Amino acid sequence: LTLTQNPNIAIVIDVENVRGKTNFELNHADFLDRLMVWVSLRNHAMGRTIAVVDHGSKSTAHLLHNGHGNDSDDNGNDETNAALCVGFAGPHVKADDVIARDVKWLLYSPESTTRHVVVVTADQE
Image (cartoon, rainbow, N blue to C red):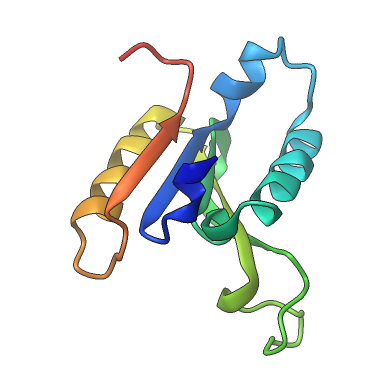
């Protein structure tokens, strides 16, 4: 994908919509494993890809790491080797709501360097 050659792009994925298009053949762990491989092969997708999951016991986000960074904390993690952000919508909102909120932040926050956002979803709206 040429879009991942752009360092100012973010890719936001509605996990349940994508899994649904495959009739839920992949469980969450398998889907995220494959997404990590995809991200690792795509230039600037590394650290710029957000996977949002419906549900969860609370609204949270977690960074998954590729494990190849040099400067890391005691757990081997640091922001320079962050490969993928996984967010859970929680019990009170849907992934769609989280995606809408996060896309707005990515595009308009002075803290963000993102200039373009690609949303991967099966939704028609």
